[in-house]
Image (cartoon, rainbow, N blue to C red):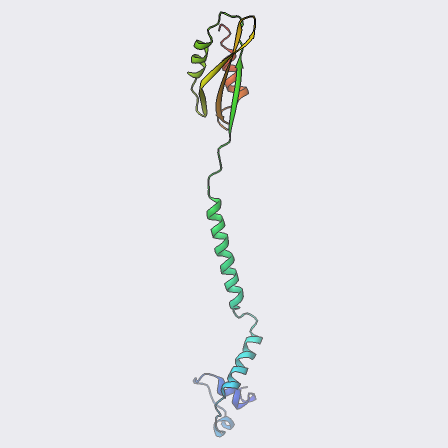
Length: 158
């Protein structure tokens, strides 16, 4: 089988303990020229179906590095959704002390609820004032409709 290859091709093989045919041993071995070696290497590259492609490897490495950088940027925690709410508290009569009521409202403590320290009294009619007070809620922790308003409506005696 080895005898089917020309002596120049056989000369490109690494020296090993391969049996040499008698006809190849009799002929002198010609050393390949640099041009022939380069041409043979180019032929090997063309026929190498599973060989490495340096350009593709570099592009894949760059793409992986870019993905790693974007995932590091995406690891920021999501911003906390907060709402600023103003409520109007209207008393039943003009004898209600709105300053005491505001202090009682601000005293409510709940996780995710922050009351504003200032409040405003505005006239409605016939000497009755309404109380306008604000607060900030974290939307996930506190519901205005289900938590805050029912709590305030329980104080009907004020």
